[in-house]
Length: 371
Ligand code: NAP
Ligand code: ZN
Image (tube, rainbow, N blue to C red):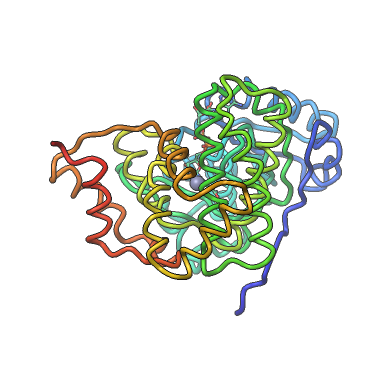
């Protein structure tokens, strides 16, 4: 089947009154919701209080599962899915950063198929029942998970990520209120903005981009570059609004194209070395720019992208690498462990320049090899 140039089955509500505007959709989804959150962000952001107040007004019962940890483990989602089935939840609301939202998508699939094993979520034949309706309330401005059907899960053992993506895993509605991002620590806000920038850049260069994804990517990148290049010590309301708009637009862009090689290359550093996802992607942004400049198409696209957002490739690479602010020192064996975990990802095909495995090693060595 040919992919649509743009598909957006999620009803998007933006701004202070986003929950009010989408209340009818929530009320129509059923009588019992499972709320999927991390330990504290849903509460700290004020989003959980707003959602539960609205559900109570709509006479919708709810059960809270607050056991989602960063880089959500597949096994946690399996556990929460069984809980959803046990309590008879009709729908799932993810409230939090990308970890809670991605988890909510997997939880909704397990809730509808409570007898499948964790790994069977990746097998469309085993997921006999379509997923429960999913709603998303982001408290970070980064992943864009609220407007796409990706659920990035950490496999058992904690060393590898694998994306679950099903045709019915799109949120039915996304409620984006920039206020919910105000409680993020500044470092998290910058890292999540770097993730959104990575989405915009990698989507723009993807051979799968369409005129619609390109415009979403450029809109996002322009807003993000404006905030990131000013390097504010603290964000104000206007910055937060711009970052939320940008993250959502970049999420739409990658819903068409997927992401490029900085994503898998960062996963090992996130899971094995604790580097937050956005900074891990930014660490490889300079490599992404320089390698893509080796192909005629890549060089052209990078030049266009930079001109349109008002920068130059070298300046952009230095800004992103600087904001990644990550230094590691690894032996050859430690590099091999990390590269072998991420070398099989499909993302390497998703840019004008396709990295070889030996180039992945070269990049890792150039950054990290112990002198
Ligand atoms: P996150 O892992 O959801 O959250 C990072 C940390 O920030 C957590 O400690 C979280 O607390 C805290 N936090 C979040 N919002 C907060 C707030 N408003 N106030 C205070 N603390 C807050 O971060 P993320 O960068 O948004 O998500 C990263 C995950 O998304 C990764 O697993 C990544 O692979 C995935 N991802 C998905 C997509 C996609 O398209 N679906 C795209 C890119 C990345 P709690 O633990 O209490 O929640
Ligand atoms: Zn990302």
